[in-house]
Image 1 (tube, rainbow, N blue to C red):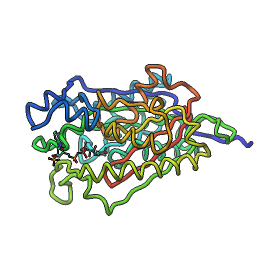
Image 2: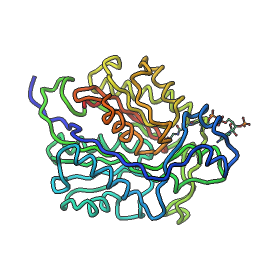
Image 3: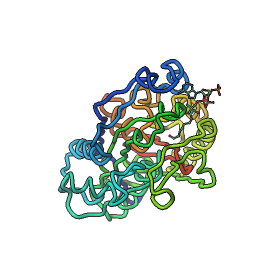
Length: 326
Ligand code: UT7
């Protein structure tokens, strides 16, 4: 087969803020219980960013970890893509703040807004830059401070989310065009704006002039997730030329343990192949996939050469999946 350039993940990093909040802590401020949250979601605790700590601060820590793991420095970076729904500022992009804070040179830097699906979108976009020769060392970051969007009187949402950041470095890798190549092999991205009311913020720059609070019709989102994620996963696998059975590790967006199990069951994936960090991270939106990937790399489950299936679903509604050989 002919030689082609793929975009390979060469380093992973992550960061969680210090402050850990248990279900029992939340039961002191809303009418909920540890039992309900664990049984319905699998979440036991989450982290919240400190006052004065912005999404860019979380992203910087994750980026430094990913660069170190890849054996690169900020001076090597020529593309920064940050997936976030909770930017420090309305503008400039959080990616520009990260660029300044890590001391990366002048390069392309921008944010992607696809809510919880943001990291899958960001990887797919960065793949275009790297595989076509427009970037040689891309930082792709998912970072969110979801605690800043919570309505602390709404028990159906405020117990579900947490703050954090994860990052990967993507670099060109020569391949022969087969599915044995390292790097991004295929993806499928989806959005259906007619369903925006199911998961939205009730404010924004050009509407209310306020950030707003997260509003979710949880049950409808749950049903949509289990049915539609499976379709996107199958499309991404077909695009990559692999079968679901070949997947070594399923690294999903961490929204609800019951969604993870439901999607894995629908796809015929054994639950032992599912990376789950929801118990300790909760839903960190765009950060959840790279946070989970980092955990599985750190504990030795995910190894070089493994076939990874990533998927997510979030506000938009957006959803999508990608297949990457690590
Ligand atoms: O990442 C973005 C994508 N987001 C998601 O994927 C989230 C998808 N949705 C979900 O994960 C689930 O729908 C939830 C965890 C949000 C809710 O679970 P559910 O099994 O769908 O429960 P429900 O919304 O049908 O509510 C069941 C009951 C209700 O009480 P009644 O009406 O049956 O008396 C709720 O008021 O649970 C009640 N409830 C709670 N009770 C204790 C809702 N939130 C809580 C709570 N503590 N925190």
